[in-house]
Image 1 (cartoon, one colour):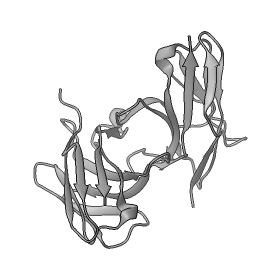
Image 2 (cartoon, chains in turn cyan, yellow; image 1 turned 30 degrees about the horizontal axis):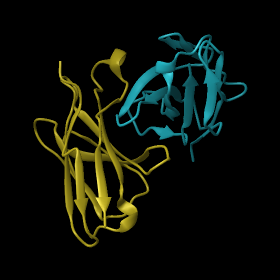
Image 3 (cartoon, rainbow over the protein chains, first blue to last red; image 1 turned 180 degrees about the vertical axis):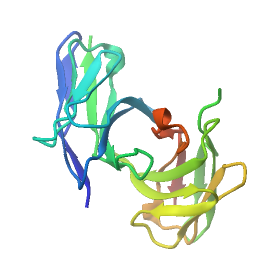
Length: 113
Length: 115
């Protein structure tokens, strides 16, 4: 079945450091790929998405590129802020994005001032 | 525009009891999905409802059941609660009618504690 593997956390960075959170997937066909963020005590918020190979999703300085050849969707940000501290989840679904989402286990990011 | 809402926020039950959680989808959305998120884990898909019918189901026992109403709101019912059912239950809504917004949007969740 479909699966998503994320790098384990926590990831601890200083403010303005470069961020990479690795995500690889296993799926049949051509899934849509997502990054969701969960702030303490809250539900999931969509951060960005990509629906086909070589698409780049971006939002709030975060970006990720859909790499079919390496089955990866790594999350990057050039300069993190304390307010970016949260848990980040990589997820996939079928092409439409409307069916079940399969999530990774999440990566906790802690940004220190 | 109200987003996805869920009630209650928190709930404490004892083993063997039954619980009902409620979800109202985002305006314009007609599809509701439920997920279980255990502490420190990613959400796991329970099932999805569309047009008042269960359209897709994850690997959860029959103790987990649901319902969707004509106004698209939904309930998740869990019978014979086990300690392992303690988790954050997330509801997500989406719409199959507007391709540009085929993303699932999540509510804040209901925290269920089983003692």
